Amino acid sequence: MALSIQSHVHDLSALSARPTLAPAVRITVKIAFVLMTWDETYRTRRSLKRLTLDQLDDIGVSRSQAMKEAKRPFWKR
Image (cartoon, rainbow, N blue to C red; front, top):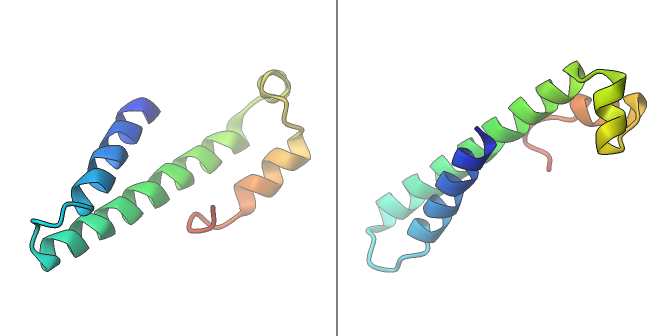
């Protein structure tokens, strides 16, 4: 799932940089990019809360680090 989101995010980023697009379209693409990034961050942090201690150990994150990250607002990277 994350890979498909990443590819779409990259596509949106490249699309919004095209000078041939109308300004309203560029703004819309940029808004979509921000919303997709926020959604991905929200889902990742929500998933982080659900990991077991073994899974957290596999990725090198302590429970307290995971909870601290999970509590951060989705709009903060």
